[in-house]
Amino acid sequence: MLTLDCIYRASFALKNVIRRTDLIYAPQINSESQIYLKPENLQYTGSFKLRGACYKISRLTDEEKAKGVIACSAGNHAQGVALGATKHGIKSLICLPEGAPISKVEATKRYGAEVCLVPGVYDDAYQKALQLKEEKGYTFIHPFDDEYVIAGQGTIGLELLNQLPDVEVVIVPVGGGGLISGVAYALKSLKPDVKVYGVQAQGAPSMLRSIEHAKRECLPSVSTVADGIAVKEPGEHTFELCSKYVDGIVTVTEDEICAAILTLMEQQKLIAEGAGAVSVAAAMFNKVPVAGKNTICVVSGGNIDVTILSRVIGRGLDMSGRSYTVTLDLHDRPGELMGVAAIIARLGGNIISVLHERNNNNSNVTACFLRLVMETRNAEHIMQIHNALLEAGYSIVD
Image (cartoon, rainbow, N blue to C red):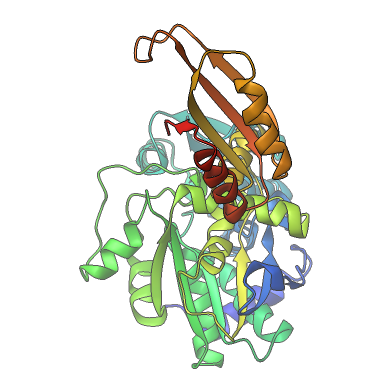
């Protein structure tokens, strides 16, 4: 059974293992609130998962250590277990979904673990790990539904109160629920009036659905850029703790997640993965009541796959009004392109891509399509350009 004393013991045990991540003041995230970031993306291994994994491993008996450990993960727990096991001289095997970011797979190997890639998502890797545990006799390190793992994650809650005693709202990413369970338990035990909100990706709302229906539910599928929280079913213990101590759970869209990642990069010079940025997205887009309140967003991890970063940035630019794509149906005659470009230039848009197409079956024989991509300042700037093109008599297709 989880207790506050257990979390304090975890804090002491992890004192020389983890990096203390200081709060970062970030008022630009939401101008109506005093926003602070808890940058666990700067933690060793790039994620909060190191806390729970290392504390759990420290509590193993000599017999359990001798068997070696096995874990399943979307990538971050894998690295925590691999590093913790290697530090203790323990053999480790990690089951990862084959779609896990290559950067997380390779980092897990570098920390000393053997990796088993499993077709499917996290839940499929979980079943494979249980199968191998029975076959080989490994000691299983659950990524979230374990008292010691939850206690390790709960040390973040203790740090938040030490770093910002007058905190009023804490926003936490939610996948299986280990992080928010520990954080919420610690906060509510020491400061019951603080509000704790969880955030899930719209494409993986397993904890939200479970709480709405008052029982654990397993989603048929999950799909999100936030691979670290792409969990079909929450844990038994985490579901109970979230039901009791969490004030609410909301979801954010893929575009909102991408916009949050971009905002953290531009404004705070922080790299966050999708799962780590959902808390910031919730604050940015007012998914939870933060106006006028001292608010902490837990940025849970920064292990984003660089191969998708450019696409994430592109989505973020679109969402924040920093990029505008427009297609015009033009008369095919000299000066039309120059006229469009002149309007955009006059209003301060910067054209970065041009596609001029004559042979289109849907257009008039004497017409052509012109597709432009431009850099813009914000949504108001886009509307200004859009209206100016219409006023000049141009036909906008989309």
